[in-house]
Length: 206
Ligand code: 5GP
Image (cartoon, rainbow, N blue to C red):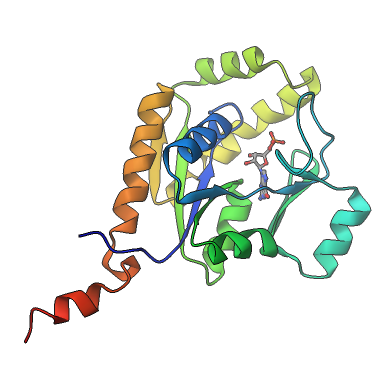
């Protein structure tokens, strides 16, 4: 017997190059009850990125206006640009009874944890520093300057891993995705998230 579970937020954070984007895309194809929160950013669009699919690309002015109107659930400065999650994005997924995946940094995670949202945090670790550098180079989408900024911040981002509920090393993408799938399945089975559980158990009393 499987009960529908109360919907919750799953935050994936990691240093750049640890594979968050591929992981979240794979999770979405494997689990129809998940949706990915599309963030807003003031960062320039990279080659191949599509507005409203990868990010909602905003000008500094547009971002600040939404910030003033309190439209963001969380927001942060990352690598010199602004990033934020719109409340309406998340609410619309919850209305559709979906659990929501967030690909956000530790600052956004802290803000969500401090809000009244139900949040599970998963920190993705690269298998080694060497591997991380090599992945960033292969990805080849960052300028030299951007790459340096990202590498400088690796240490800082990794220092926040103890704040998360889970840590998963992404050595093999499929294995890593399977582990995260299991985490999500186990979290759905937590008693407080299982709807109608008390009602079901009460039936055994009479
Ligand atoms: P990128 O520019 O490489 O797509 O993302 C840079 C960093 O910003 C990543 O660590 C990513 O997780 C984080 N990020 C993306 N969207 C958001 C957001 O809405 N809020 C926060 N706090 N961080 C975000």
